[in-house]
Length: 144
Ligand code: CA2
Image (cartoon, rainbow, N blue to C red; front, side, top):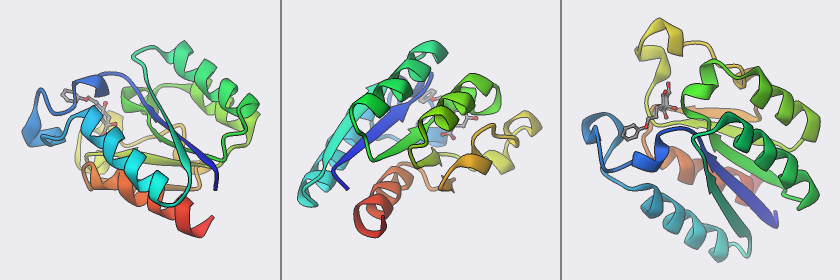
């Protein structure tokens, strides 16, 4: 495993600054720094990307193919439940990815119960807060 890309979708730039009771108190920078260290300790490179825009996330997934990214860890935020475009982008690049959600989407509103990505993901980590990102990286760094 040489290169992992971490993608965070809409509103996740606010992590640690609002609604800490729901999403925890770690910031996105805290998450990215910790994963950077984790990947470096395994001799791998981590690329980080956050966007509030669906098209920018699609473009970043396409770019990953040209960069020879080996694996993607994504929290697609609310696009999880709406985006056929992000699903199609993953299908077009065939890069293995893990879908991460901070909260247990099945314990929330019904509209969050469906994901356009889960059935094409390598796996999903849901409801474990920011630990989910670390566990996803651990999988790719040690088992893929
Ligand atoms: O549980 C998750 O990780 C979600 O992907 C979070 C999304 C939500 O739409 C999904 O259904 C589940 C919302 C992200 C909002 O992020 C914030 C972080 C801090 C403060 C406010 C929003």
